Image (cartoon, rainbow, N blue to C red; front, side, top):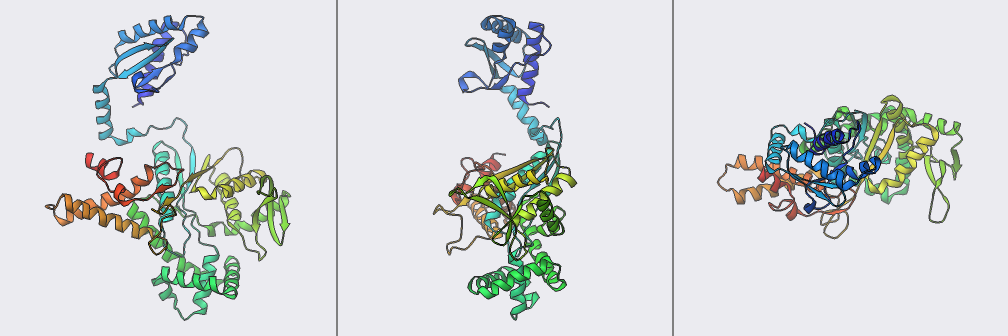
Length: 466
């Protein structure tokens, strides 16, 4: 089934071609700019009349007569407006029938693309070693929606969960575990609490922080003891993440993991390639790339740090390896990075370096799909009353609890099991729809009352109507 616009374009185009005797005619059907102009407008008469040396109003009148004679069931009536515009008013019965078709077969909502592509969608990508928090919500939901839509269109979608499993936080955790009396089992049983204690030590003790950074270098160097401890932390963290994905009905699974550690063997090669291109420069002991288009407010060039003074690598190094893999191994036509808008400069720099150094080529489009921040009532990033970051699983549990209270108040006679089943669906949908219904690039205010309202543009309202 074609879209209404495509169907009208084909129909009016055929009538216009017959009228003029031309083979290729574009009626230029667009959505009407105002309700009084109908549902669609065909504006192609103007350009065609000029091409034929005819009066556009006369040509429009002739086309209108042919359209009325053809009696398309999709259209209730046409109007000739201005110098030759055709206003198109759709028939109510036809719209009803089309809506009923979509209810029976929802896949008709997304039409297949004529030129399928291989598209990498990099999304969610939490830093491991602690539980996912509310800041991961938007990237996870938006990214999954994009992946589903592109897949439905017939594209080959490769989901990539670029989890942070290779940074300073793991050196911090491993060092804290080795130096404290905590057993590995205790640390893993309460990963969030263990992380908090390790972070407090890291922030308060500079010598401990130095040892933690040394541990990162040992980890990156493949030390067996450090790798064993690291793997235990990773396994526990991923279990937490998958539980959240399942609760959100997000399509990410363990098979979609392409963590930072996956690219670790390629990082030395990234440095060598940048050296060979002449882009890599020494700067205060670190190894950086400076590109002319990136300068600070003081006019000084902004560095893209590739390797730190202690030999460790940074996000940019890993991201360059990922670009190379997605371009040359996966043969992707597009790579979409669904990441917070605050990382815009980082991706601008990474994409520019990738192009300059040959990690990417003209065959791939690198795109940062940025999004705004979920804000609390104070206008700051959403947190608990105590100022802590909200765990994502806690947010979802509260949504279900609030939905259960709401369902119980409106339908007290339902069996409890049925109310809990409804609450699970409504609560999770409310969180997801509240996010997706907002402008992607804007910050938005998190508000339970509007999110769970049975009035307005909300998930409960839509689900109730359905």
